[in-house]
Length: 253
Image (cartoon, rainbow, N blue to C red; front, top):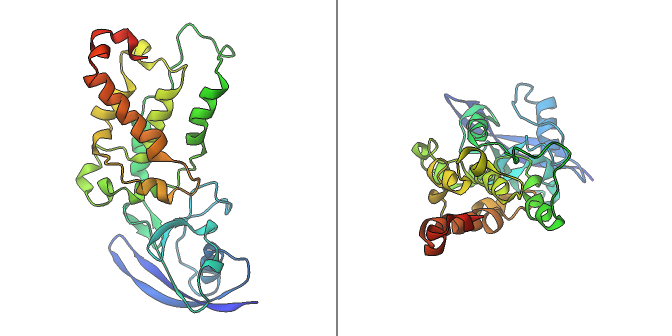
């Protein structure tokens, strides 16, 4: 059975904007993105919204719904009361381009700064071998759809614009952790660069104070803090302060 949903949607651009009220038809089984599309089709043809798969796998339709960062395509209308006002605003950490679309190029810049996977030089393609337990360890991090909701809620960059130059954010610190855990990654042997040291010195791992807000909003339920960031922080401390590792550097790996 259909009903009239009450929406409050942010309209504007980089120069400024405001929340505007709309009434839009909603039907059983729909998600917030369906309602935004109907609003776009019937009342606001110039409404800017980014989306692609509508299946929770592309990460494009990130927004803040009633103040909580979510994917619009995975937020069912049934979680709201029919008479409830649903507020939809762009994710707050990144500059607005127009309406619900933000400029997330910061994230792609940080992605380019992460050293890529570096296999042993004497190992040829097709010769890679891993234990299943090593596959399982990093497989969780591969589920990331790069919706950047974790980046959006991280107060290190959300509340402090000047930190962006020196902090990669949870998504890319998790990427570094994933590579550092890979048994075939030989960046240190190949280049002399230690991933944990690079995470600390170049990507701002020390800024993270493990509030777990990134984990709370992850639509893939990746335990970013517990399984990636905290273990990497521990390894940074081990390498810097453990007297055995300082005396026997070959024990580091």
